[in-house]
Image (tube, rainbow over all chains, first blue to last red; front, side, top):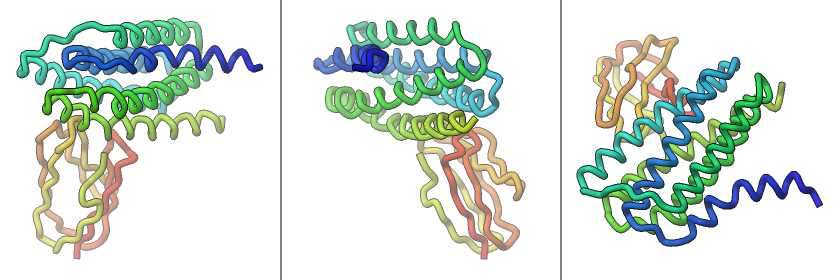
Length: 172
Length: 73
């Protein structure tokens, strides 16, 4: 039995397990904003910590794109009169993010880069899964559903980009 | 996330406009050909005139996985 592997699975699973329930539109809006903010924060940490040009470029892209998405999400919520509502999925996402940041802050250079990118790969896989299984099917309002559908290609591209950086880091 | 169509053929002297219909910013960049739109936010457009005949491969500087080809006849 590989205990290390089990621990990693246990860390990844909670946010998604909680996402299985059917969130309301205000909760979905909150999850979207939270998920974006988490990646902006991780990106800012990486931008200031990494010495790797490719990792810095990726981190900057995360900051730019997720900031753009959150601006749209905030504007839509205002337009629709939806007040984002905190919920268990958002809380679980935040808790995972705090653990990730705490772990990253202990690392340096190559170890930092690898841990950051590995987590970004997992995170974007998780988010894509949540978009397909929970957020899009769950959103009642057509514009909210539309926004999430429009975000999906960006997340898929981020995942592709993260995997590319991950492969390059592995070569070193 | 891609350029649609990814390959476009035009005649020399044609004006080509790219419009960002995505939610995140993009660029149209071909450094070698001197093409650079700057960052285009959602809904913004950029127009250039195809002067030189040939094939230009371009990317989005922010998302280098996005590729496009402009063919000028």
